[in-house]
Image (cartoon, rainbow, N blue to C red; front, side):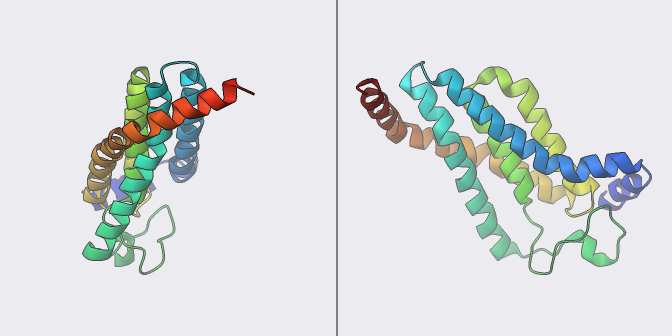
Amino acid sequence: MYHDIVGFALTTPAWLHTLAEVGTDAGLFLFVALYGFAAWRAWRGPARDLALVIAGPAGVVFAYVVSEAVKLVVREDRPCRGGVTTIAACPPSGDWSFPSNHSVIAAGAAATLVLAWRALAWVVLPLAAVMAFSRVFVGVHYPHDVAAGYLLGLVLAPLFALLMVGAVTPAVRLARTRLSHR
């Protein structure tokens, strides 16, 4: 499947190659902007709503750390090391393939944004899936790398955020109290 996807990718126009390479990172910046907008939106709402927005990035970081730990154990070489022509340059040796960190971060950001603002689900979850797929499209990951990364981010990030919200909510209340007395 990897070779079929990469082979197809090489037949697509150059602008799509650029979009696939740049789009994964640009999508992450879009998620950052959405966190900011979600925080602005939740600022005057219940403390738990703002706490969910704040805990979201912590959940993404947690999922990323877990994925890095998995990479150290699994140590799967990148598929682009096998002499395959790809759109993107192959990452250096020692930058392992399984799971895809981009997929973990994209899915984790999407899932935690959905916790904080459910109406975003129809935009952020498919965007995260496209961002994950782009890692196979440009040739730096196998399909199972991105599927595992997507699943890790989708499950671990919101789970960690939900575990953190109980600790973050009182901090939000305290900060609001102190800011209102200025």
